[in-house]
Image (cartoon, rainbow, N blue to C red; front, top):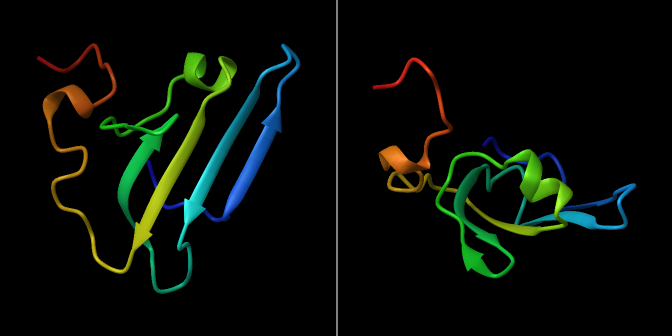
Length: 85
């Protein structure tokens, strides 16, 4: 997941759900993701799934001027790949 280019975005989906992403403290200086919350719960993955979008989640991304070098470093944080062992 890369740094968002916006502070807030809402997608009103055809199924009636709403997907929202908020980027608190997003600025030219705060280019690194410090923490991610999905529906107010810590989100440790480096990606968002199609189902998370379509089910109408709210993602809050806390931005920082310094990288969080521990965020998303666990093997379980990576998206599935047929080439990973």
